[in-house]
Image (cartoon, rainbow, N blue to C red; front, top):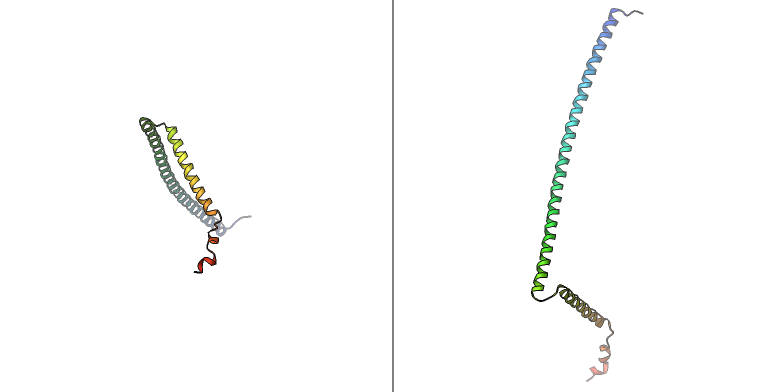
Length: 132
C-alpha cells in the first residue's frame, strides 16, 4: 500500500503539529513544575522562619525560668543566712509557720463548728415574754 502525495503531506503536517503540541505540553509542564518548586520554596522558608521564631521564644522562656530559679535559690540562701544571723534556725521558722497555719485552721474549724451547732436562742424568746 502506497500513500499518495496528499496523504504524505497530511502525515507530515500531523507529525509537525504533534511535535509542536508535544513541545507546548513540555513547556507548560516545565512552567508548572517551576511554579510548584517556587511555591514549595516559599512555604518552606515561611515554616523555617516560624520554627526559628518559636525556638527563640522558647529559649527566652527557658532562660527566664533558669534566671528565676537561680534568683529563688539565692533568696532562699540569703533568708537562711539572715535567720541564722538573727539566732533562728530555718527549721524552727518552718515549724513556727506550720504551727501558726495549724492554729489558723483550728480557729477556722471551731468557728465553722460553732455555726453548725443548733441554737436554743429561739426558745428563750417565748410568746409570754412579749406580753407586758
